[in-house]
Length: 383
Ligand SMILES: NC(=O)C1=CN([C@@H]2O[C@H](COP(=O)(O)OP(=O)(O)OC[C@H]3O[C@@H](n4cnc5c(N)ncnc54)[C@H](O)[C@@H]3O)[C@@H](O)[C@H]2O)C=CC1
Ligand SMILES: O=C(O)CCC(=O)C(=O)O
Image 1 (tube, rainbow, N blue to C red):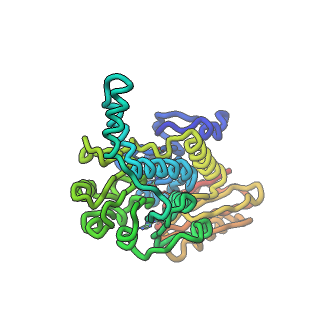
Image 2 (tube, helix red, strand yellow):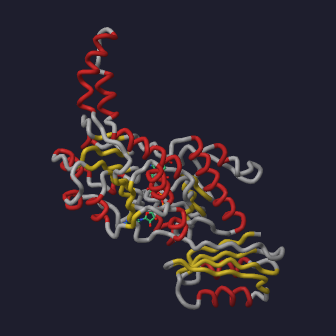
Image 3 (cartoon, rainbow, N blue to C red):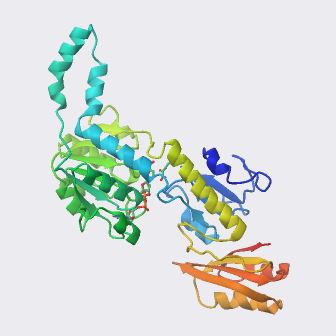
């Protein structure tokens, strides 16, 4: 549904898979930022692969209700985003956007331009980074990378993430100070950078009330999602001098003509390396799921890997996480006089997922019966 790096598409051998940008009955879709919220989900769809981090463009709840896992590529573009954030940080600290605009407007001979440059440069006095405080909101793959890079530049770093993972905590430089709220970060930092997903909880996270309590003359960096920031409140804070510069990856009408806003066209992940990393990771996850039913890096399914046991069918069932589902699955198999060689069941929130290796071939009527069992969302048989 978007440009997916050929390195990723090549993970699907063409003898086994048909790949196209338009297809009426796909088994799976791969996408980047395409918006799926108004898409009629085809009955054939078994998996969605997001070649990137954010999944706010995908109706994840609707997919879960149909028993369709949504895979993403955690961390695969984190370095690319970190580098752009650092670029934005340097641009803001040294007034590079307006200074470049100023230079581009100079005309005349070299001597005249030089004279005008020397006379005009006092408007573009910036600040240096060592000793300044960077506030990082969201310490996942990108936030941790940015925090660590800022420490290496001599900045003080304060971070806020109430659900930080053990992995992120291990990766974070020891000197990063822990904040207990977004407000604490806004009040303490010279520069604030946002690295949270866009969800119902984070939409409008940076709003007028919060900016009113932020440190005077702050730089705000948003390479996460436009919706996390209230653009009207940002413009007001810029006009009041509360914010010095807003650097983001999302152009908006509210910022038109402003020299104190640097808005890039959503290029955080636009490096060949990031696009390849994301495409390969998402493609491998989707292919593995189609071929084995195993789940790695799905945002709505539990992580589950079961090595194939025996040469019979593999049954996979996604169902509501309610009592007696596992009993009904194993009874259906037993009533067909078949033995279960191995099975693995795991749940995540409202959803449970089972992979069942069977000694033999599962009759069609058992599959039909399972599909019509209350609470069952999706059934697949992998031969
Ligand atoms: N500009 C671009 O091209 C790109 C933008 N992104 C955006 O950046 C976001 C973050 O990406 P990653 O770091 O890879 O994701 P991640 O899932 O590794 O990290 C997100 C972190 O945010 C934390 N978080 C969630 N709600 C929070 C809250 N209310 N306050 C503080 N922390 C909170 C989570 O606990 C998690 O640790 C993505 O969801 C995506 O929207 C990601 C890649 C490229
Ligand atoms: O694929 C892209 O260019 C967008 C990347 C992004 O926003 C993400 O990974 O969340």
